[in-house]
View 1 (tube, rainbow, N blue to C red):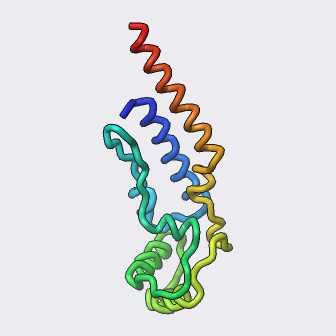
View 2: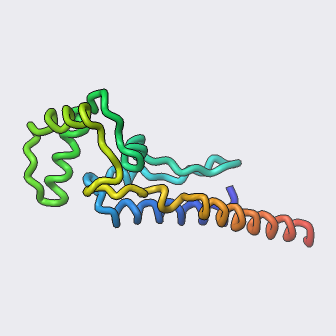
View 3: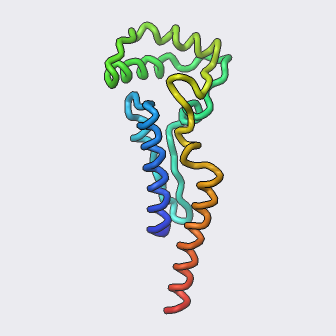
Length: 144
């Protein structure tokens, strides 16, 4: 992929990470470590952990989330913010999530981790920016 286009996508990744941090959603740091730009030659993608959907949209009620993931989240939160949530609470948390789901926005997650960064206005700007890069490359080729 073109170096300038990669820089544009890397900037978006950086802004998504900064959004995640500024919204106070860091627990283990896994999201930041797993947020990646992938240069696939003819295209470039940004990938994030699968739970980014729940961070953005919440979670519907009806099924148990993995208790092991909640235990890990409790351990990570205890480490990073000094909370003292007993790991035994994982099943109770999972039960409430099954029963009620998770609504976003809420008092702990205002939402918008990704959608505040990648929105219709930003997509329009990206399209214009990438078109400028491509036009400049074509002009360079034609004028050589």
